[in-house]
Length: 152
View (spheres, rainbow, N blue to C red):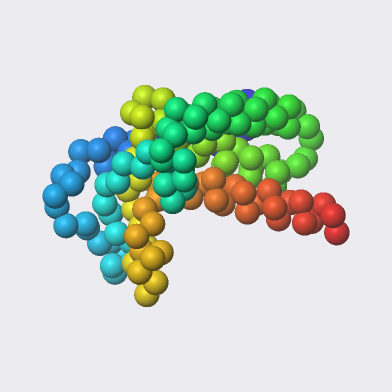
């Protein structure tokens, strides 16, 4: 049961941040934090990462819902296994983020993104994220790292 707290906590934290971001006025200048390294701004993304599948939102919602449901079934199986701490943590992080973005796609018809990084690379600065995206990325990294350790 304790392993369900990880994805639930990520989902909840991102839900709260998305709700807060939705109250921001779009006409306002983006706010900078942490010495200007993080930029807070609201963006409605109807596609996946970098607006992938933006023109087919219903298909995207269906695919992400099915994949996330499948990963949830795998996670339910995985959390009953002893050990596998790194894999459980990675998959739990991915699930928390995935369900948050799927929830947005189903209820809002878009995903709320709300921060970007101030960098010297202007293209990277235009990419806007949310906490769910960060946990999907970090969880994916942990799963890859677990797989590399397992093979060595």
